[in-house]
Image (cartoon, rainbow, N blue to C red):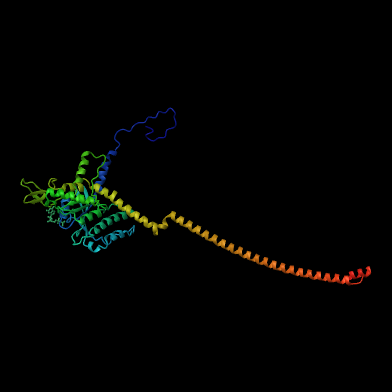
Length: 448
Ligand code: GDP
């Protein structure tokens, strides 16, 4: 008990330490409840991008999904990001628009017909509030030439990632406003034929940037068989184009039923949906949301009639949080790391280089060494110059000495020759004179 209360005990050899297991309720089992309370207080937000050609029932479907008139109850914001989205972040002024621009090959004129419109509203259900933002793309696929009409939409997704990245990099981070696109509903025209090139192109451009969920719009105009064949063709076409759509994740702790339900949801993509904002009454007097035809009634909330309920499960009731999580952990992370790598490459090559202490030190060392080498070379050349001057001087004086020596030698030998001549003459004159007395000889010798 003393040990548990954290007291330091004096050393006692006979002391028995009894370790007791903590039993009973600690309280961490309440964590989910704490989390739940906190989430409720904070509320949720969800940004849904809807891409469709005009008249495919997009407004109707969104209103059916959230069971209200979204447009009427929302704050509406329009933006044309196609021209100004790139390179305009406050914090990281990146000029990364080049790659995309080169890809589009000057398709700006075509893309300008696509607009971005956001509808933001807060909806509540059983005390849970959801801040919903539906991002509409009026004009997509409506032009005669739709080449590049994906670009303003991709720009919008990037712009929203950039906004978040910018907020993350600020000293006072405010990440409460998450404007990133959490899911993209792509409406496919119910042709029962094949996907159009624009459909494939769009899916290719966005599937790695947002959770893509393709749906077959107004599927009530197709028969069950047509839907089955069309779904197969769509999946094949997108698979061949390496397009991945959102797959509900499963975890090791999930039971078999959850795993089965999740894979069933995935296999039904692209959902063949029907939307309706009006109620119809059947023969038995039952009223439901649906569409009425001469041949019968379609109940949009009935899984036997269309895939609307599967879409609602995937998008809202079962996997909304997974869509948000994948956006944050996978899609945004990829975007962020790619962007920072690009920033890193720029740092190496340009302005940021001086901030790298290692290369700065290396550069300074090289400069210092170059200075030393230059100094050494200069000293060497001065030394060589001095040595050669001295050598020249020595050679000159040697030559002078030699000349003087030669001159002296000649002078001396001339004197020697003259003396020898004189001696010879004297000897000759002595030998020619008559013999004299030794005294005379002595006197003469003395006089000489
Ligand atoms: P948007 O232009 O894509 O927003 O399309 P709307 O939601 O305004 O719908 C265009 C027309 O299609 C309207 O007359 C709707 O009543 C109709 N419509 C919407 N959803 C469906 C559907 O699931 N099936 C059928 N047959 N018609 C629909």
